Length: 118
Length: 116
Image 1 (cartoon, each protein chain N blue to C red):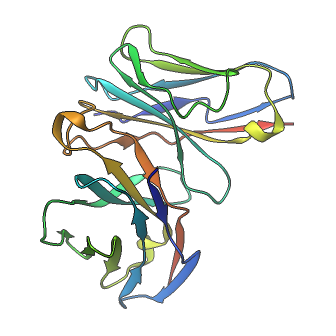
Image 2 (image 1 turned 90 degrees about the vertical axis):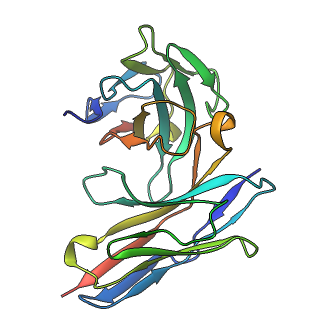
């Protein structure tokens, strides 16, 4: 069975600084997808960034980037130039499959609460 | 356009009662997912619909939980004989097609269920 582990329950960072959130996962699959979701107090889950396992290049979305280490089964999220609006709970998630075999089922980690301080 | 909506936003019920939670997906999305999120935890998968049929219901915890999507759009999660342990936020998500990496799941705001 696939598992996702986030070992940092809480993190804080000063506004404009950089912070890295950790995530490790366990799977025997070769083709899969990894995601980072943001959940603010409003409860609305928002996709931040995603990575296809078959791509070696790390995904980047504006101030958000990932460090994907497939052999180590590690998928960390780096937030640059942190903003007050980044304060939220962040979840790492895993999805098996590729193409037509993709089940669509997301497996989430326990989450990391990030507070950005002014 | 409108996002995924869920009603009610909050539901308080007594132990042993029956509840229904509703999810309206984004128009045109063929795949629909239900997740349950306990306090301080990540969401846990419950069930996945492709169209009207449940393609994967492996996450439903027991036979008190049931979900339907009769016309391939709105879905209802039904919980019989509720227990205090059922208290959680129930999240719904939809995507255009259930297969393929680019089919991002769009989440609703959830229904917070409290069983007294």
